Length: 208
Image 1 (spheres, one colour):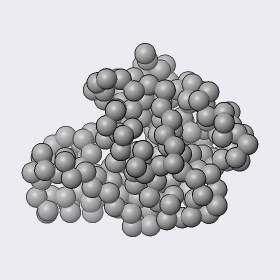
Image 2: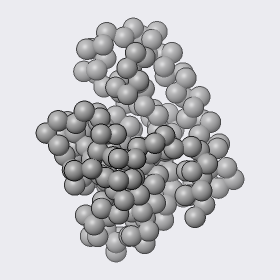
Image 3: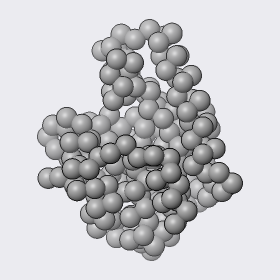
Image 4: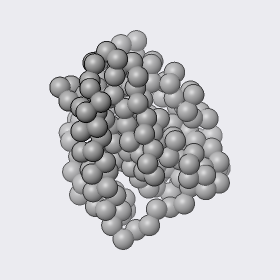
């Protein structure tokens, strides 16, 4: 199964989320790739759209492999198994973390601009990404949402590894994913168009 685009994946994903329509959900996309998916989900559910900012801590020689993730408000999640397998040093981890913390701050300024964050307190929030491999960034997003007082946290993605779905079951109140292949080589493999989004593409979606 392949999704043509992230937008089409979002429309497919929304078909599994109809039960949340009456909850007045706040749909939170993980920039950048999760925002086009989240925009379609928010449209279909009639919910509000915002971003929730997290950054993957990629292994230096294999950036797509997450050894952890950072989130707003000082949230930090580590993948102990990846750290053990790669043997990265504390200095190596700290270097990556420092760089990604700066990028997290930059994205907050660029993507939100003068718009304030939509409050999460007492809301049903739906955290949306274009897919999950390890689940590190989604886990960080869940913890940000909990810390901000969300009443219910739902993680919804078009494609995920079995490992990540299992992990999210411990972080979220509900996990929705229509495509969980036995082996996921990479999230991009589930899409025909998986181009790297620009900040402008994301801000355009948020402004709409």
